[in-house]
Length: 194
Image (cartoon, rainbow, N blue to C red; front, side, top):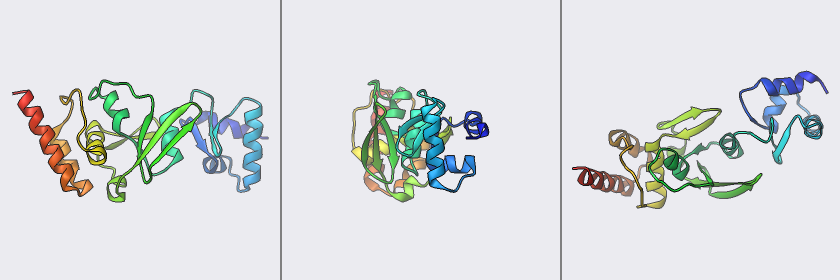
């Protein structure tokens, strides 16, 4: 094993690596060699195995980064973002992700809930930003994802929402019911704050 192999990982800003990413970093084409190197570094404590095919520098890896890499394309959204932005006050331990499939996963003691939306909306980067090696929805995009997937929900604080931005993003979903829900929430917000 070359010490440069592990050094290339340690220099990276990423905290999570797929087998394919290790192959590129190590310039290795043989799968068996990649697995042998990964297993060696796991045994020596220089690499941490999260789940088959996914590795981290150590146990303190970025779980949101892992969530994005497990199923791509994807981005962090829904209750994870809404709680972080103070729109819902309840704490959610599960990380919620928008993807091309519906799936609940548990890995390394963390729950991940993937929710499917139309490819047209999923593949648009409007209202999505890169943050610490993962993709995350803005509060407005997360709000619209919630309305699209679950209909009307109780939300504790609508004041952080930029309504103009919501109306700009809403056509991505090509869903009339979503537009009507958005108008209903906006009307409620305006009446409550008149």
